Length: 341
Image (tube, rainbow, N blue to C red; front, side, top):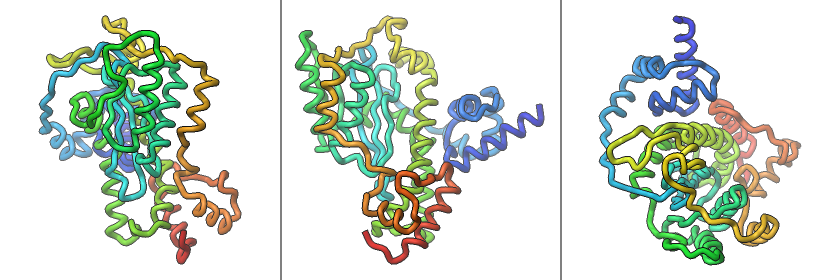
């Protein structure tokens, strides 16, 4: 028993070093059991966190959320898409979509930009292609980055034979919605706050010059793989957590089950069928959307690295944790001293 608790403590410390410093005991419990293969009860994890980081536990306990009433008629009735900009000063942008009914994360991406409408269109079209369904309504802000998605969503919905009592899209930032507030708080605690502090320290120490394009490219190459992995872990953990029954909560249950089987709870999948086949869908994918560039970096930067290292840019060995990412960043800075892109 003592040995197992020691293993739990060591694993939690490792996860905290890797950026999962502000997560609550339920998320940490999922990380231990699902992703690390370390069996632990929620009670044990709660005690471990109180032992290791009591000040963070107390800070989370003091936070009080005032929630408003919010309802949907089922999964895909209204999905919210938005961007997270707090890491943009360091060259990294996050974009996400979440189902308003179940709160299931539909995509969570990190890359060099969330302002290019073709990148956002690719996320949306990949979702449509994978599910072969059209969300009834999409809520997004009025920025130019969402222009293509607005047009595509409108075209898809209006092509349906069935009439709908909802507009194809709604304008407005989703951060004002309490269904999204919990998601934002968890994402900030689990991933983004660690990286904001980490990059601030790099800037303060002189390792990172935000005005130097080479430094930004190095940040993307070195740290994006680690951040993407953490976002993947966060998404998979979030989507299997349970919403507890609450007085002002429309429905309770596991998010993925709520999304994929809403009829179990007396609701329905409100999405519309895709009116064209997948082959035809490839045309707007090719014409109106773009994938993120390789490693999130500019091609000129990768060509320089290829010339310096003699390694094909498609075969670079990428870091898997924070320590490896930082060591690679320092090495690249030394190699690229004096280069401009």
